[in-house]
Image 1 (cartoon, rainbow, N blue to C red):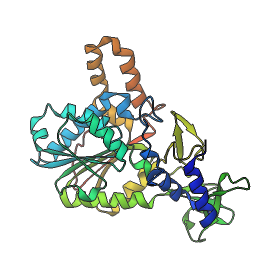
Image 2: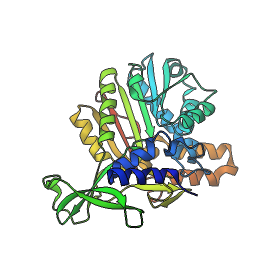
Image 3: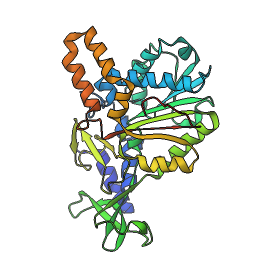
Image 4: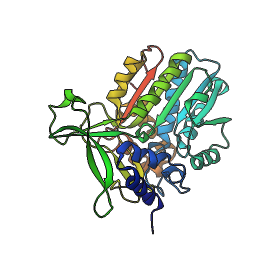
Length: 356
């Protein structure tokens, strides 16, 4: 069956020439007609392409809820504030967070829930899954969020931002583009850039890859400005790195398997590792305080995933095997515990941040 999106991209390349890796990712995520998130089929969960931490265990969302409650108290328990989630997926994380927070009436009476979601399909899923929860407001971007103190959370959101890739060649750094070979199949090609570009990295070995996301930096600047203006915290959890590995981190997932990025374009989950080291440096330049970068396993253990799992086992012994497996998948270094990082920011310096 012909892939209409592939034909569309090939037509662009034939008319205008090769496109950058960033443009390829942007089309994949945001094209009005063909983007991955517009397809009305399951993407997250056992029957989708990938699974996220909230779908693995309810404990993940419960611990994020506890974190939010502690942060609200650190902020002075404001009587009106925003709880914002970026890219809520199926709504599972917010569902678990709110179930946990309902035991704190003052929190629930003070909070407004705001979800940032561009996909109309995912918005409908979220509205269905969260229909019995508090009143929830949906937004396409941060600009329409009320100017109240905010707690902003995200899980596997930052990895969706498009990245530019540069490769160190014998002639210097060259940006990687996507073109067509003699058979009109997609292929990666290098486009020469200014010799002075990344000159301080010329001591790396040939073939090294440098990745950079201007759109993520712009979004992060917008987010930090909101926190600096209105006060609050941001908590970001995603697969990524602190020290640049200088290799390609783009990955495409279909049916829970890694596939070639050119396979079934528009129907796979396409993302890249988050450069948390760069975000920390950016936050410091913007005058915002930061905490971490730490491994997800370390964070969840500090938040009490072991005793919480034991409590669930005691109340439902038949689920012991599944509960332990879920906990280990979230925390073990060979699973999600190390590759997923946790990073937080705030408008002013706080001590004893939970989890860190």
